[in-house]
Image (cartoon, rainbow, N blue to C red):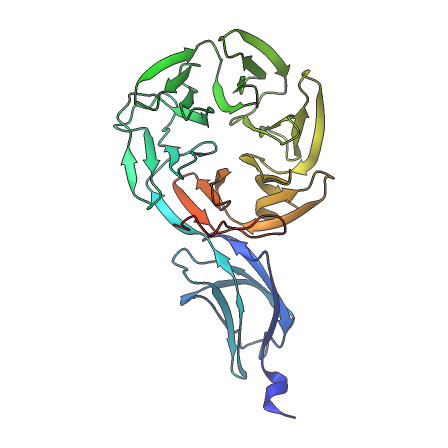
Length: 346
């Protein structure tokens, strides 16, 4: 028998996008030289931990110090590799609890929210398009949800005092609305109404003239409501409960609530691409990371990750990912969605 017939072969890696700490599955042939001879799996030059092994499948954890764009498998009979897209860290020592916000220039706004009632020296930051972290000198307790209006002003909810604040492009901070309960996720619709998720069970609608309405009522969330508008103008809401089977809600402009997608574990951050596909940070069928759900409600597991709380697309259509302690950049290319060549890839 030719030695090449025993060489490992990797046919696929699923998903082909991941963050450090995510779990991916390699399928192929001859991935084990023998039951007592585990292969060596590298992500770039970092050794990965194997959590399941068979001749045709390896499940591996992407190591925290991983870098590069290849996964390799080496046995005593040879080596094989496959291309792979890994998120890179933009900044650590943060504490986001919801989606980051990204402006048209590629600046990322993100928080160090802290425990409820905890005062920290700096609670709001900007990451510029060269990945440099800049503190924003404002006094905010527990900043939570972030959203930008059409003019580039930043809106920030506080789960501490139930208020929404407005940070102008000139740097002035003012109170925009009060009495929002435990204010968490926020999002603007196309006409400029701001929606605020009170995790105790209410979605508020704040008109441009600052009139406040109760838009919808949901089950309370144990963590936060996460909000995003789809291209069709409907509001989508995720809010983890004590159930192990949570869902994403779809709410039409009249406040009518339907279940868009169920069977998710702890759904949190939400974002839409230009084709109307919804991306949800959640657990699904044993997978943990980002689930992509088409408008026809067809799901797929697209990014392996742990501890995700938020996500957003930047102007180049790459993903900005927020964990409980850091921000990451993930180049993105799926059908109908590619990185714009004229913009930097950080």
